Every structure is written in C-alpha cells, then in structure tokens.
Length: 379
Ligand code: GLA
Image (cartoon, rainbow, N blue to C red; front, side, top):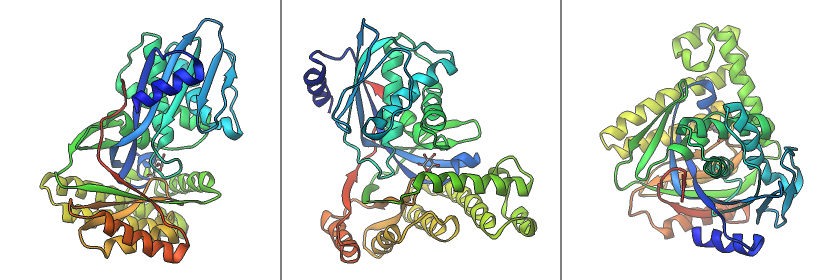
C-alpha cells in the first residue's frame, strides 16, 4: 500500500510526499459500548488501514485529496471550517489540526495531504479513527514533535468528539494507536490505561460486512450514550463501571425499563471482558467464543443496537463448524459481524454463510479474512 500511496501522491500533486504514516483499522473484540462508561474493552488492530502522505507547501495553502471525493480540497492555513458532502472525509484531518493546540502542540502551515485506504468504510472497522491517527502522525512528524502515544490517541478522540461530533469513547483510537500483531489491545478506559494481551495462536478473524447502515446511526449512538449517562445518574454513580448487578437490582424502580436494560448490558459486558481476559490467559478459545456470542445476544436483546441482518449472520455463523463465536463489531445499527474461527474454517464455509444471508436479504455481505497487525506508525 505504501507504493500505491507514493504513486497516487505523485499523480495528484506532481511530487513525492515528505512524510508517510499508516494506521490500522480495528475489530472490537469484546466490550460493546463499555468504553464511554469508563469500563474495559478488548480490540484488535488489523492488517488493513489508512495510509497518509504529506508534503509541506510554502504558500500557506492546505490541499487535501482522497479517492473518497476524487477532488482536491484547498483551504487556507487558518481555515478550519467543517466540510459537508463529498469533502466531509477531510473533517478527520481537520479535526486533528483543530485538536493539536488543545494539547499544546504546534500545527503545520501549508501542505499537500493525500489519504488512501484498504478498509471498507461504514463496516464498523474504524476507518475514521485510522485516518485521525495517521493524520496526527504526519502532522506531528512534519513539525518535529513526538508526544507520548497516549496523547496521539487522545488527539484522535478529541477530533472525533469535538470536530466530527460523535461522542465516542477511546476504543477505536486506542486500538489503532496501541495495536500489536498477534495481540489484542486491552483498555481500561478509566485511565485510560492501555496494554497488549497475546492472542492464542490459531484464532482467525472473518468479517462479514452487510453494507447496511441505519439512517440514524449517529443519532442512535448518541441516544445510547445519553441513556447510559442517565442510568449512571439514577444509580448514583459517575459512570456505569462503578455499578454492579446487586446495585442495579436494588435501584430498579428508579430506572426506566430502557435505562435498566442498557445498564444491565454494560455491567454484564464489563464482566464478560474480564472473563475473556481469563480465558485468553489459558488459551481457551472455545470459552472466548462463547463470550463473544453472549456479547452479541446482549446487544441484541438488552442494548438493542443489533439489526435483523446482523442477527442472521450471527445465527448462521454459530451453527457452522469451526466457528468459536460471532458478534457485531463496533457501534452497531448495521455494519459488520466478526467471527472468530479456528484455522480450518474455510472460504467455502464463509461463502455458505454469505449465501444464507443473501437468500434472505438479496445480496451477499462483503467477506474479509483478517489478521492482526501493528498499530499506527510513520512508515
Ligand atoms: C464505536 C465507537 C467506540 C465504541 C463502540 C461501541 O466504535 O467509536 O468508541 O463506543 O462504537 O463499543
């Protein structure tokens, strides 16, 4: 992909980039909507991502290009206006530029900037976090700054929360920033604290991207966020991580039935993350798989962020030999299902699952067989 980036940069801007950075997409392994509740979560950075090229300009112009729009967006050095329509992809690097001073870091002047990706957009694999991290790395490198990795991750989250306007947690940026091949990233969102956990050999990831996206997905994500905050308030805790099931049951009358279900999901999901950590330590992939599927069932019935399309895929997958477990990955309300399988699960089996889905919904989901990969870096 680096070669492709270099060629594309040359074609579009007529010169070579001075700095190139790459940031991976991520799989949300387990810990659904736990991050902004100050809970714990496990994710995997994958061997697909976003590559960004950068070269300074002396005329103060900032030029942005991606095949997503196919057009050069030219802005002035001080122009941080939010973009809409085809140019809205540029809100991620622009959000990073707006975030840098908040972290007392310098911003670059004029530049040419180009991004390419081999991550499907809208599949719940965090192409946006990957773009934020790769952007942050080129801007920092170009200005000779090297803040701690935590800061780079927080810059990405700040861009997403404040410029793009999604109240996401630290999962996506944290995993893209701290990823390591053959490992999962464990995040305790209270610090946040980041650690890597070895992934037992023989675990394979398959992504089934439905290409469906609820029309109100951003609003629904924000609504879940709000319901969780309301539940925490009613329980008298600052975040749901501080509640437990006995407390929830004792306070049931104070919560709306919806807030109760959301809180129950989050509390039980945090417990599942811990159980997953234990099972990973002893290499029990069967147990890990059961926890993944249990997480999906909880999303389906309690957090209500699944869709019939995602449920159909999970049902078909868990009935297929060599599948340890399957669940929606990411925010939900459409997007993709990930399955963890053993190494003998075959493309033919994946195609059968896709065919079952197509029988019901008319078209096949996109299939991706992923490996884990390293975190964001200048390349
Ligand atoms: C999206 C958000 C993450 C996280 C997940 C759900 O991916 O960006 O911060 O909340 O949804 O777990």
